[in-house]
Image 1: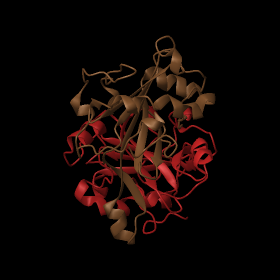
Image 2: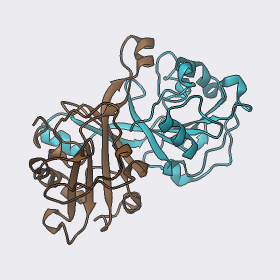
Image 3: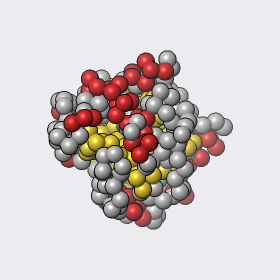
Image 4: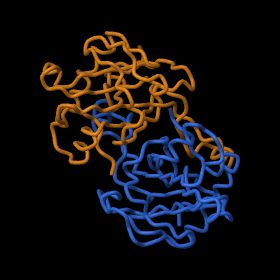
Length: 179
Length: 179
């Protein structure tokens, strides 16, 4: 497990990230909703998440080495734009990530990388789901990671909340809405 | 003008990028549609673009130094997902960008930056609009840049097409859909 909590801080479900190789070109969204629920939090892959609106974008260096987008369902977008905490029940935040690839045209023109773009999916897709009753013991949040559409294992899911405590003052959410 | 064509290759309307300081925290989308059209291509700020779905994400190094998201209207999303070229008339692609900021929690935990997130808007917002008749002389594309909601000047707009010729084999569009 390469991406342990105190070595890497991705934007979402921090410690849950292990650098897993995901089949190049396989679209998560193309797989549709999966019937298999994650361990620990019992979350199924939310259908249609690739169509959700954008909250923000980020880049992780180190072994994570990805470009990522944070998308949100309607509740998440509304809450993120208002900036009011805590997030309401029903919020779902999705973190997608892709490999961090130099843009071919840019590198050819300048002789060195200038522009980095999203390549194939990388580091799985992660979700935070707000349900203040169901997930009361983890700040009201359920955490989920899917690798190529399949739930990550129990060990991965047991590490999420501890790292998100770094963002306790922002209701355990690292990202902020990018206007 | 810092971001000249042959010095920088952003994902969209390449040469059009001049590094303009945009008022921190001012939301483009919050300004709504503007009545002022751009020079050269006569394009008005498309209303509601911040709600469009995500095509891809990118990072520009150098003086551009930003994190960016490529959003598309429904026509653009459909075409991007299919990957068929050329893009149909009615396609609108938006390039938003924000400053490239280290995430505070990450830097504190590790002593050096690991996670970079979107800060205030930076480098304006750009659009490509496909109309094969109206914009026949520029590959069927109209190009637009708005800085803090206002059209960039004529000099900026005269540089867009020449740099996008680097992506001629992909119908002048640098980005590709991130699944």
